[in-house]
Image 1 (cartoon, rainbow, N blue to C red):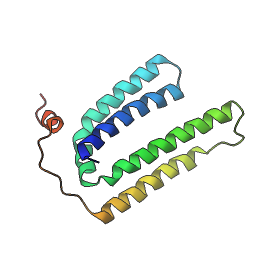
Image 2: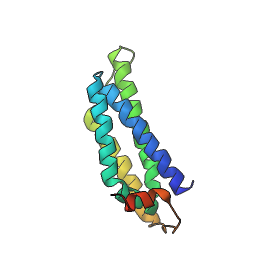
Image 3: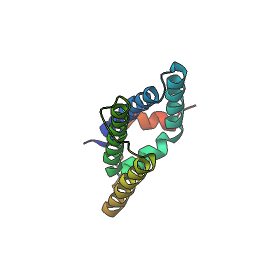
Image 4: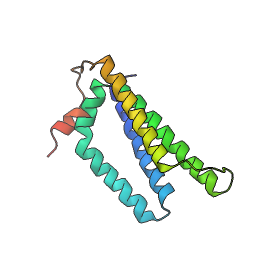
Amino acid sequence: MDIHRSWRLLDLVFSVDSILVAVAMSPKPWVVMTGGVLGIVALRLVVGKLLTLIQRYPTLVDAAFVIIAWVGLKLLAEYLHAIGLLHFEIPKWLSIGFIGVIFGVALWYARRLGPQEIAEEHDEAADLLNHHP
């Protein structure tokens, strides 16, 4: 998959994911809106470094999708537990630990493969990031 297309897909997934998590955590509209705005600001502040990291280690994109899938499953399990269809809870320490393991394994694997060459292509998004006022 083309790295630029991967980045756009990753951006879309994180945008949708942050809204879903905010809605799942609170039914209050101001919490959802604040979470969305903070997510946009945070991405804007770190997008350049994150893009470079993902370009050098594209395996991390796959890890991000796995982490998002895990968070979705965890939220589904919490909902099923709350309505009485699931008779156990996944402890928070286990959930956070699993996310750490996923990221750690992905980082180890990405570093084992080594950094990928960053293609010198014309990228409009990178131009906008480098020339913002």
